[in-house]
Length: 146
Image (cartoon, rainbow, N blue to C red):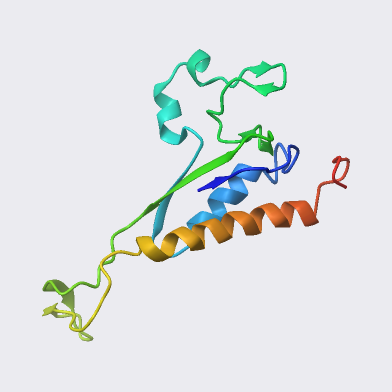
């Protein structure tokens, strides 16, 4: 998900980080199993000098942090990715147990979508927007937004 136009200064550096709340909101969606902000896991493969978002006249020279620095929005585009698990209820026979704990096989019949992708995108976008508006409605004391 990408969110442009987010004002700088949303979030707190320790107890209420913007990126932590974004990750929490996205992880609360069923089937989401992972979240990355900015470079995410790729940042662990980079040197500090490669991942740095240098301050330049008029803003930042890059956006590896995905629009958050130290838990606070930087004014750059927010970038978050969510990893979604595949839907397990498919027409293929699968092993399980019955109500007595005995092994059995089930096969789901009927129409079942094998991908949540068409529906997960707007849900993730809505969760990101809810986090942003929550920060905008309840800014921390001392913020330029308070």
